[in-house]
Length: 219
Image 1: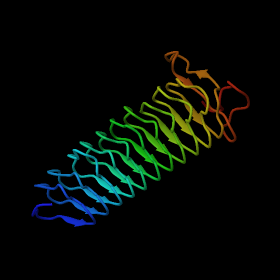
Image 2 (image 1 turned 120 degrees about the vertical axis):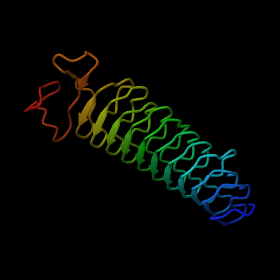
Image 3 (image 1 turned 90 degrees about the vertical axis):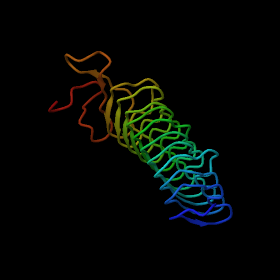
């Protein structure tokens, strides 16, 4: 690195290519090695934030390989080994956990917390995925997922809410679905007066559904 104010570089080739970028911190072997003019990045870990052409700003990458492929993505927080390591241009996202959001993600405003969470997400935005492998097959966004292996079969559709262990584990094109309860499959109930595509699925232990397709109490 050349003489730049307000930087910290610790480790072999850390910030090795830096020219004018200020306010960067890199700790670890090849951490931030290709960063040149970008500012305000904190990259800690072996090869963290070391992608060629790293121009993103105000990122925090912590963990071996965290943010490894980031180029122009900015305002991201990736914590954990390989967290966000496939994200190149995605912005304003948070990935916490081993392998979380490890995909060629180019979207924005995603929260992925848990091991293998959101590992197939590519263009989707505005998703919240929490739990081991939550939403790990989903490629598009605007889904809210909470639970171990919840929403693991849906791939290309959006606007789903899956809460509970294994909620929505079958079907690949779910849209506007709400599932509450563990091991939810496909219990279909269209909303009265709503578009036919809008469907609620409520099932599993504690989901207040006496049988498949029945009207939940109080709805």
